Length: 306
Image (cartoon, rainbow, N blue to C red):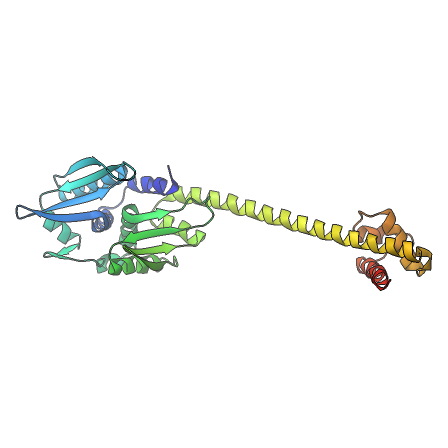
């Protein structure tokens, strides 16, 4: 099961206040519902590929409107042959949709009801329904963090974005060829969104994976830094040894001033020592790390002049 599926499963098991559940149902029907006219009567079909979400829609309709609905299972014929679950309602459809602020007369309302936008708890439930209907979130173990909610209508998408940003989630919108999305990219904000919609177990898992991933990244950065420093030290040591050997072969180390000669001989004897260790153990020492570095650079300069 994907992480997104786990989040949705947890959301379908939540028990919420009756009025809050209506806000969730409004999002589910507005985003996944379709209305048709049959024998001068409106028929509502709400479709989902997730069985738990379909059961949630069926239960909410029955609890709030005593709707005598039916749950239909069909198999997709194209691409992945997954099951499609359809909640069908034949009676009182117009009254249900008007009560949920989806229809006004026979006119579809794509905006979210102002009373939902203005109420924090109703907003949380509407966002939960919107995520169940058209949301997705990447696995926190993946290379990037991304959560999005898809909508068919631009005004509805703008309302969702506004609702998310009322919770300081830094959401942004984007138009796709066949619709609109509101998305969140920051890991911390995605975790906050999961908390907003009540998916507490998903928050714990998300944070656990994120912390482990960040810890691995930190360890990798430290190891890479150590390796880089080690390689830098080895390269510097190699240049110093080559310079000293060139001086030795060309004019002899005896030609050097005493301090440089001692440094050259001690470096030849201890090619793996760090600058700090050279300064602490050199005969006539100790001397500072910068002092050691200065003498070795002087030896390299003499070599280059040769």
